[in-house]
Image 1 (spheres, rainbow, N blue to C red):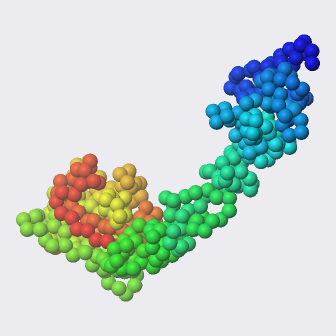
Image 2: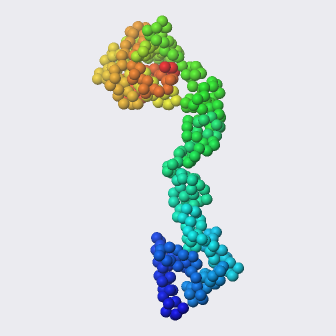
Length: 378
């Protein structure tokens, strides 16, 4: 080979690998192939050392080809096709590119034949991490599963992973509140007095099953008399018109009537607020608040009847009345269609209370003089 031709060959090879930008990194092993028509060819044939950029033309198999020395500090490309031979030169046994196979260099260009991509459900190792279909969240074809450690058919929503195919111990149905107990799940029946939420409705020993304290309010149109929902002790030294002694209930298909009995005559109270609060038994506050001020003694511009939902005024009216006797009572007739959408639990808490001095700013949140609480089952 003439000196001029060798110089031209070196220039072509160097030009092919001189670019050093991030999108087109330089080849680590420029002597291992010659680009031809855009395709990577195998180790280039040579006659003598002058034919090779590395200056090493060695016998590899049945032909002399360009290569480079290799050692523990300068290893050959890290693919199975490459090896450091007995002469301490890199050689490649690849027989052609394998673009669907990870971590191989079939075309002996020192670069993996397959470019890793995001893993999807297709039975292949798309991201070339030696795991097939190990997908992440929202991957194409994947479904979110939840751990069902106790085998009760309900998953723990705090333990989740994405899968291409169903896997033992993982399901798509959630709702388990204790994944260590097969007996506790949304299909279970509440077991009373065990202190656990067996049916996973966020209530331990829930009253609608165990009958601990709630009292069903009888139908006012039926033969049952009024139900005493709660009896409260009298308070020594408290004005009788402010002292609640009982809460009584009746209902029909559309309304529930709650009567607050007092130790004295409400007609003698001076602009007093009689208040009913209703709410979720598992929450600290009250969702619905009804305020009644009989108005025997003038309260000025303060309304006689008010209603609030989560602190916001309700426009729906509530029927109120009082009995000017000693002892007497005040009563509230509440529309079920108004109450129940805001009280989804079958049992709700009821509080009757009194404020001796009406205060519009505090009556919906405070009770300062007397109160009596009762749980009610629908």
